[in-house]
Image (tube, rainbow, N blue to C red; front, side):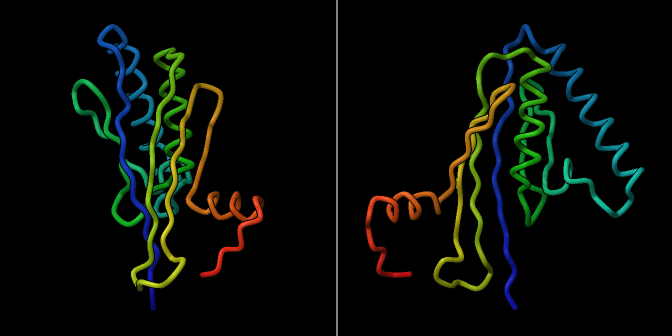
Length: 141
């Protein structure tokens, strides 16, 4: 039997003058995670499954929690963070996915840029789709 895994990590950075807003956001995030855990018990909510956010003093470190990195939750909380600190910029993160049994086409990955209102996604298989649309016959499929 084979298992599938994914992993990623990134920082949520803020300017020093936004420390109070960032701290309030982290407190609200932590309260929401606690509420969801108490409410759902072992049935994790999609907003927290596969994601950990840790306070590093001058930024927050986001990572998967063991074997899984939840890209949707990463995008959700990144947007929420940008709104809280009222940042016009974006946050980039990437991830990789793999299978415990090395097989052809069992590796993947991608990236995302998140703003307060938008998400821009790309994954490894988009290159295959674009090549096919351009008329390239991929011979190793």
